[in-house]
Length: 329
Length: 304
Image 1 (tube, rainbow over the protein chains, first blue to last red):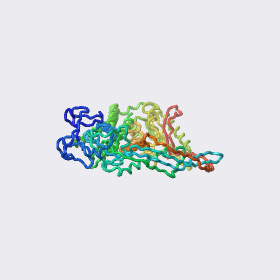
Image 2 (tube, rainbow over the protein chains, first blue to last red; image 1 turned 135 degrees about the vertical axis):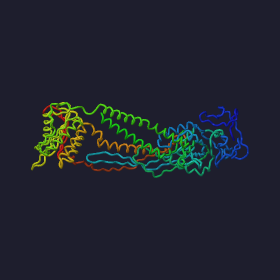
Image 3 (cartoon, rainbow over the protein chains, first blue to last red; image 1 turned 45 degrees about the horizontal axis):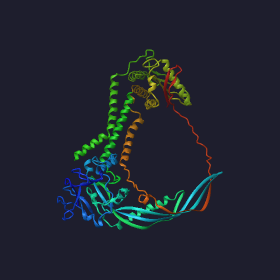
Image 4 (cartoon, each protein chain N blue to C red; image 1 turned 90 degrees about the horizontal axis):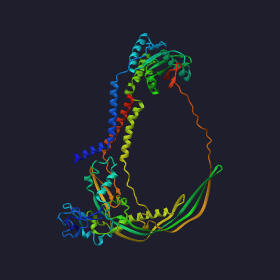
């Protein structure tokens, strides 16, 4: 499907800034109409007939010939229809600004790292996530100690009191996320969190217009271990945080038992910027809702040498000049 | 594209080092202007002290031949113009005391009084000048050999402990083997300090070391600091995905079980303090003082 402007026939896209559908050709707001694709196959652009290079799990892409954003109906419907998504809250310009602010102090980054031309290649991607809801019964059994010290005469006394500590907790985990994309590194997606779920909205394919998207690459069971690991760690941390006032705490039993579970499928927004430098790719990811950035700037060896050498030169010149001036005064 | 990147690199470099470039350029310019002004203002002023005797070499220790005295006097005359200061050389062979404090006091008084009695001074009586007093006394009780510098006028300000050492180093490199060579070296060094050449030609050793090492150290630290990047952090909390933000605590138990007590004897420190002490040998700096003639002198000495 493609969203076309009723006024000018241009491709209407979702604008994070306006939070509405927007036609960049005639500036019309909410003037979109959905146009279904002809049945010529996914790889053929319904607008220009050009070949769209789509991959196995792509559910939305851009035609490289006519620049229209195409949404693949059969990949966002039926079993593949997400229940909800967080629409992009941050547009490309805001994302560029955010990247520049974060990396402007990286003096040794290559000169064109934050150039407009490079940053313009950034893509907004809706990443498929499985969201797990768990009702958990968490139990802690252990021993805590309280230590008291005092001095009397020439002796120092230490008194240790031992307590039997128990906690029983019910925890309702709501939408523990785990990404279902092979392309997106798990560690990076974990660092993208948290997303603020108050922005969650029911899925509507129009939110995908103007962005790239994938549908889930694997079933929920396959990535659930990641969610369970995070859930167990969080449950233990919550149990521990409920115990205070002890000098030391030793756990004899610490469990997190899942009482109820259900899973939902949704999409979360990510801006992706791939910077290529000397044959290597440096990926940067920006949370499309909160603006949190994950990535490490590349280093230019030449810049390291030139800048450090220049600093040495200027410092030496200044010290010599100062000494010369003092000698003449 | 490549050309644009190079141009951008240059632009970034000059923008980044703008402050440094301006600071270095301004300081170098000031240095150059001052050097030109100093050169334009002419060399050392003419001598203006008719009261002082013309003799500059007093070889009471008899370590110099007449021709050597003559040669030294001519050399001193040349150096005095260069340094714009009187330079008087006095050799003695007199008992000044075995103890350092006694030796220093007597050498200082002798040198200061000699300078004042002669009313030496390049610009005026008791004015700019240095007296080099070299003692060759030695007997069965030990050596009292050593040198004292009595400074006056501008030389009192210029010659501090490090400059004194510079002059003594020049003197002692030769004086035992070849007194004339040692005195020539000391006189020349004194004139260089008087003219400021010594400062110009050789910065203080420590400053040179600082100027050579500090920029390297700072440049290395700068590189390391800027290479290092902050790691991406996990910004979720344990309750981020908990409905309502807080779990429900169904049961809580903190039951006392038992208690144990232990004790240790407190060790008291019965050790004594550290003693300090020591003595200095081989002369020292007298700092600024007033001679028995009521004139201000500086200077210092070193024993051989």
